[in-house]
Length: 199
Image (cartoon, rainbow, N blue to C red; front, side):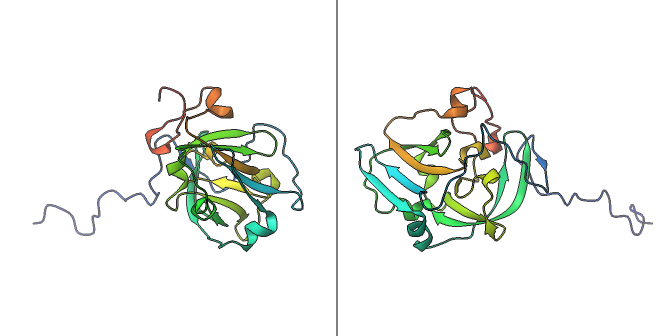
């Protein structure tokens, strides 16, 4: 006589994917912003990388669209505890934008139309980890989600993926941005639950 009854399969295995600690899965796309939504004309939009030496590298909307485009499919994680999996984007890799930039900086301060800022180590914007994206799910990125273009840095909490991005200031010293000066974590790794300073 067997120890296990025929047909017994044990406890069913969960089909839920692994999420960072403290996160829950959402199917929608919550809208969270630190201020009013800016409306930016494509005729005047530009993306500027400013080096620590004062050199500027500029792209108009037409120039951004003429660069090689990538279509990352990534999971995103908000510090308010929602995660959305398998999101589809289109945009330009920061590797492409930084390729011709001569810098010895180790940090970047992303800044946005509307005044928002957030800081990131420059290494986290390289190596296929970050993009300036303009399309979500095959359609132009809506303004409430950061359109016409936003930063996408999916391995960090989503406040690091600055909406309405207009450029990067490269820095030799780290400089906290909007939420970091309000007590949010300087780095923001969702897998280590780095939500607030001291986490």
